[in-house]
Image (cartoon, rainbow, N blue to C red; front, side):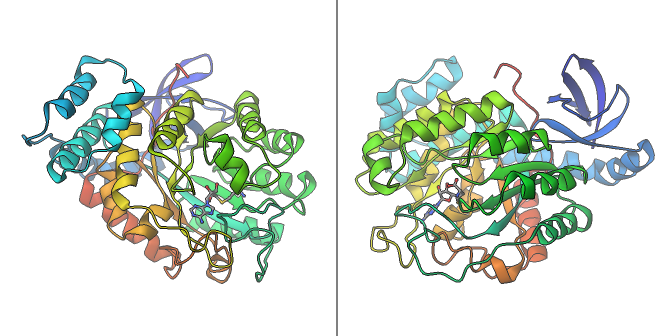
Length: 426
Ligand code: SAH
């Protein structure tokens, strides 16, 4: 928790051990002097001073030790590199914006030393803009029924699959366990595009989870605008909706019957409604060129999201793309590092798909500029049925084990699971 030290209209300033972050006060009735939890830059809960001081006392030493460790891991070593790369990286210090050609050139980095230097620079920018804060959300996959037929996705309509739909009671129960027993302050509710879940069903679920002092994050695909509006009114405040690819042709070839324009319109609409936005793309779709990857990063930036979410394409059994090639882990690390350099104060997620590609990639991604993670809290019997791609890294990991692994990783990197605040200029 942090303490509110100032309120300017809708914006509050929260102090965490002397470090101050801006947050949106939103609907939490907090005043100066109150102790609060914030997530995604929104105040989600207030707690008593006694409880807050107890927690802060337990955290104090650890907090400063972690900060020190992070600073140590964020130095840029003296690594030999070409003049060309050095000139591009130098732009960060000069505060100059990158042109597309430079981002393409970064994407083509292949020399081992140069990659190291590139990642270290991105990690250094992450440390300077965000300190050691790391956003950790829980994700609950509540239905694998989907009405879309995306070529890449393992829960597409055209695939034979054992289906499940969690009832309202089950969703609320799983969320309560995550919030009350495990301490999550933000939960992503993800599903296929399943019109069985109407506003009448989902709004009370959102209200109930919101009442637990949790930020409700929706990831329900291209559903109706009215549904998103009702769920905002019910208390959902964040939405994860990737545009998947900035290349119209690729988009239409892998998402039959839908358009990029329509997806982008919905993303803009969600922002207009006031949702905190997480968006991004898949890396490695068929016919994708290097330029598309850079365009994907630039399109994400232009949408001004609070969080970047992108991951590698991973083949899924029973889909048209099952035989399509896997992408190289370094490509993903480069995309993380480019996104960090091109949009310095962004929040960048390391996704489960990247971890699925390579067990070490979670750690490497966090050291290449990423500052956010998600932990799967879907009940085990459902998790294995939510098979958007094969061999998911977290498939056989119990929730508590997943949390322990994440906390251990964060500690080894000197990161703390605290709120990242909100960018007021956005
Ligand atoms: N139905 C929702 C949520 C989908 S799952 C929606 O469409 O937004 C969340 C993300 O998983 C998708 O946005 C997509 O980018 C990703 N995904 C789906 N299949 C994938 C695959 N085979 N490999 C990698 N990522 C995949």
